[in-house]
Length: 400
Image (cartoon, rainbow, N blue to C red):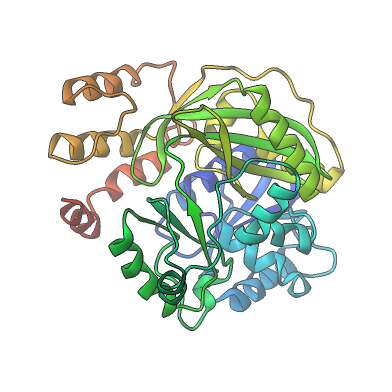
């Protein structure tokens, strides 16, 4: 085993678990740094040591200093940020890290052009990629003075990568104003905040997700996936799909314009009427369904490690299209919520029995699990037991 460990920064999520398992099976020692010890990554046998550090959302300086201290003591071969908060905290504070410590990110300006959603859209538009229309900075004064006609719904998106560190942060990441009354209510919230807010055209349609590995703006490999079932905020059952050439071309143009190096998740909204893709955003970190990519044959965590440590480009073989991966706990919980009166989890579901049948079909052995693993069973056991925490019951009551 390589004695130089890899540090996973903010590794408490399913994507963190996928990365830890992947690198552990690759023969590497993995040190996970999390906000709390109560997480499924800490239960993995592939994590040599789990450390609890500051919250990178609210204490970025403290977090960067903590990672630097861990790096000084353990002399890692690489530090991999797992979440957006870790990406932002460590990219902007690289001077905290020991000089010999490698960080699995491109340079500061490139990372900023992904984290700053307004700047990111400017780069995409300059590259000729279709984006939702931008209404500019809306205010009650502007609307009252011009009598401007707006096309509702309107999307309000938090564009500020440092939102949580502001004196008056915006309390939402994305909001939707269905009419002028809702817009005026949201404008009151916006005017009380220090955040930069985007006002965008609403695109009605599904989302296409593209998982990418690029080197200095040149795409080495990319694949698509679509959510078959989802909660309000995330996909819980997903399938790898072939990418339409127009979307693949947009991704190549975008990576070239960003000069991106490493892994990324690029998302497009597909207009329900025209079928045309509109660029949504790029996330420069591992995605929730990273395990799905690994099961389908593309080991993005190992690619990330081998390139940033050894300068080795990935040997990319054809991916298994149609490969399915499910977050089984969320799948069952969301089905129960649907039966108790919540929103349907399934795309194209025709009722509760139809939704239940889809969930049962994906319990077959050929459908992989995000968390479950016979060779590493404790994370899935902990995740299942964690469902019964009192705080989770309170969340369920609030849902209804």
